[in-house]
Length: 117
Image 1 (cartoon, helix red, strand yellow):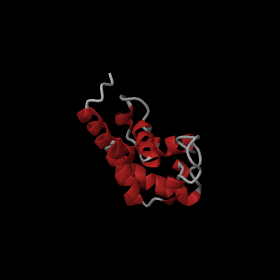
Image 2 (cartoon, rainbow, N blue to C red; image 1 turned 45 degrees about the horizontal axis):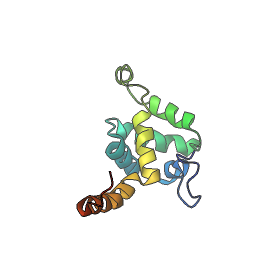
Image 3 (cartoon, rainbow, N blue to C red; image 1 turned 90 degrees about the vertical axis):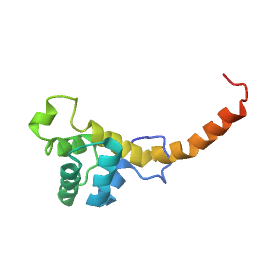
């Protein structure tokens, strides 16, 4: 399970993150990057699931998430795992680190008024 198959093989894959991160780290990732209100339940289920089997596929992760999201929450908003997948993608690809580095450069370029459209 890799969010970006073209990524450098030295970068951690989503499967490695799910296999190695502690429950607290998973909870933080899912809550902070996915804004998931069931982050506690989902993180706990991931840890419970990987104790008996590795999470190697997106289907396995989706099923783990689906199993702990209440039925009422599943009625609207699409698949219950979408925010968890978003959070894991952001963490694996270090998207906020890239953004943090790019924003000052973008502001500098705008301040210089280099004439670009």
